[in-house]
Image 1: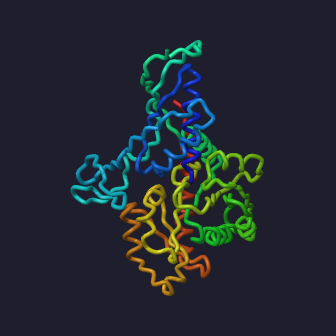
Image 2 (image 1 turned 180 degrees about the vertical axis):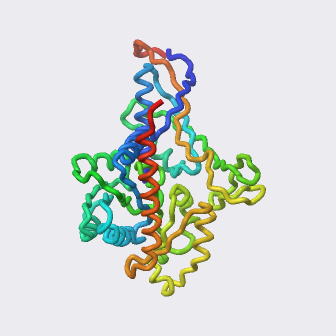
Image 3 (image 1 turned 120 degrees about the horizontal axis):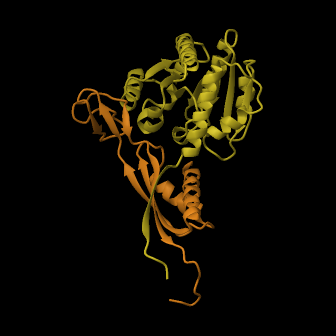
Length: 124
Length: 234
């Protein structure tokens, strides 16, 4: 299960940004291609584990799945695959290995809150 | 009171660190003229036997070495060492795949310069290794006849990430009623036009074709490297 090491990289990356900008992270947005070799559910579970004990504890991981887009050599245009088991143009059936999208594993954005310079104990 | 949450655009590749190390490794291999081949498969597909045979057959004419990833034991490294080629073990512990940093670390201080071929045997796993670039020039995915013809459909990601498929243990085809055309069709479905070799490390069947292919790729790689390295900078 390599999702845990992927989750740890995400947390590390987000934490660096948080430290740099002095912000509190509430959510991490991730683009995850269907060909990235990562199971979204396992990653969500691992993210929680990876966050515990860090400044990101309690933050959310928001995954946007990226479908597999290939270039069809016959139609000469990009097409979105309907099945991972069939690397063929969904319209004309031409086989193709030219993957344009679907391997992404990119942190696209962070939902942050500026950190208060002082903490007011007891304030609502 | 805290301010309202806001969105900060970042756009960073999660595997950036791995990809960067892999890129440097690839540059280094290019400069040294070493063609790097990685092997991925499920556990028990015959990676080690196939690699031992490959090393043994290449050794008389080429400078070869192997790195082998294993979760816990050094059994595979010991088996590969019988080929007389330099072999180094990478123990991954609980980690289910190799990463570029492990390859880099294993190469440091290993005095084997001037190789023609370096083979990297990944941990037996058809899921996790697919995401990690190791700086290799060629990724082989192995599928043994005993595993069933539908493996490519079950693990399309790793088959799609590979350059060449090798069907192993073909000496057992008859005993397990292996349907070769179904296996070919399934590989073709998840990775159209991928080259497929059928071998038996035990009998040596099919090894010659596959080795011819490897040597042709090495020759191509060396002439490309010379052109790139001797290109005058603009």
